[in-house]
Image (cartoon, rainbow, N blue to C red; front, side, top):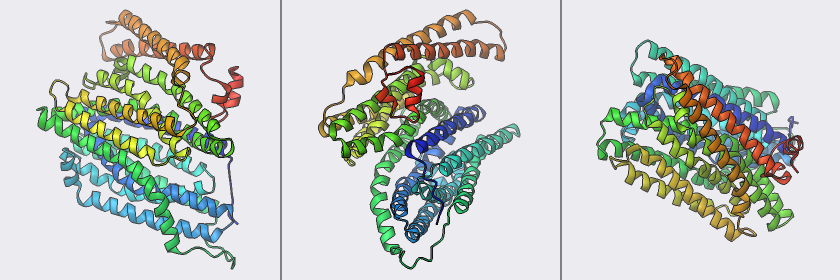
Length: 541
């Protein structure tokens, strides 16, 4: 009998939370210095390559690992080891085939894909990145197997291993090639090599871990007859395809958005290729900072979805609505201050993280800071609706939001007076439309509309005061320290010290206010791993 770790749900969510946060930190350690090594133009090629890779990866792995883990979980609960093995074998072969197709396309047509994206200099990077698709597909199969046994540890550790190897190899290769005087294209390909090597490392870890921990082979039990390969494949497709479609839409939209942005800059707004690359590269750097808050939302989704679904089944629609509202309040509590802080401290943030970046970065990050809260709310509402039994509605909001994004980006980026500043406005319009649609759907299909006052009121006031305090500290200290020391190190200290002081002030002010104003309740804290213990420590009732 295979070993069944079977962590309880909150334990698994806690492990996953820690892993996701660590992965995001390592990801920032990777992308921030990499952006400084590659420069603005080089980072544009890097960003475009990653969007192409994510497109193929999403199609191959978005829904099928979820489908496989679900089927394995059901079979494992009945002690059907032969069925588990058959599902794993068919699923792995399916992932391998999908990944091989994606890898082959990227290896055979790198120049054509780069030309389609209006960035022909990505051809080498696309070719180097190509093996990652099939490697990650095999890894996804093994992750689905472990998750089907309610075991989040292998998945979490493999993600940390993957990111750590990417940091070491990617930064090492890019830094060495840059030092040796190679072209920007070669340096970007060196950075991308880190992703390919890290994908191999994660795959090897998962294979070894799963085969050591579980008996991945059929049993000799004559009464445990596995289903046919056709049955397994049809069920994988039945469950996985709708998830893949809904997830892939956003990936397709982002790919289209990148291509449209580069095309509008180069062919409509009139920027030379190098200048357009610089603008897109600065935008990519600002996006790296913008994506950080999502790390704090993703782990919550894993605990909120079953909580809403269970409440709906056992206690009724009113209880499910209460939990959904608490989830949105927690999202606001965590992400609104990060969004406001990102906006008001956009200038020092870009100067500290990317001191050599072009000056457009501050305003781009300001726009993205405003967008950030709506992005995290869209993630939350897109998960609450399926948990409430409304699986198809998020697809409508994603399509409408994507249409808004592509339209606004196309119209604004092509305007020479707006140019790259139109890209984050397109992103803002996308998530505004998505959140508005989802809240409308929730009002129609849940027990009552969400109470926006309860969601935004106290947390919003706390975050607003925090933003004012942080901006005031930055402005005051920044003005006092201006001109102290002429060297680069001196100039960095002039920015870094006021920036750290502003962030620290904002954190303290916000924590004091949310506790004083009772912006969070004990019921809210119960939605997060170890939340009751944290609530007791903070005297939250």
